[in-house]
Image (tube, rainbow, N blue to C red; front, side, top):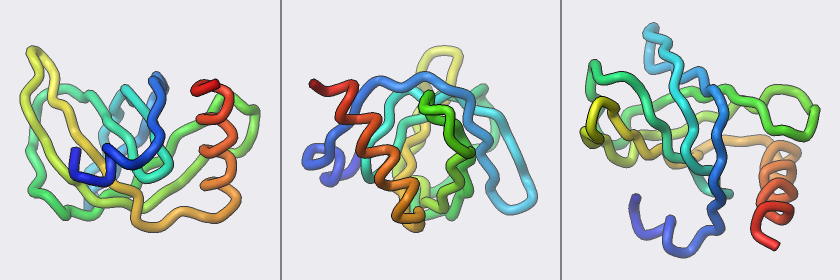
Length: 109
């Protein structure tokens, strides 16, 4: 992932993620979560260029509402039978950002 990954807290995170690019919606599996983005694993298929806008929807294990975040593709690469996608968060509510920070606090103690 780009430079920001090295300066942002990240923790392993496995959850279903709805990934929407334009009119196309896919399910992906989160691999990790950070304050600034997440890494996804999905079935091979269409590849996206860096900076492609994406809408992600996922659930944290805190019992709260679904998190909906606008982001941008940072990278894509083949990973065995999967495709790995890095996404940078561009627009996320302050409440959801705080929920992610609390999640990371519990995972990174």
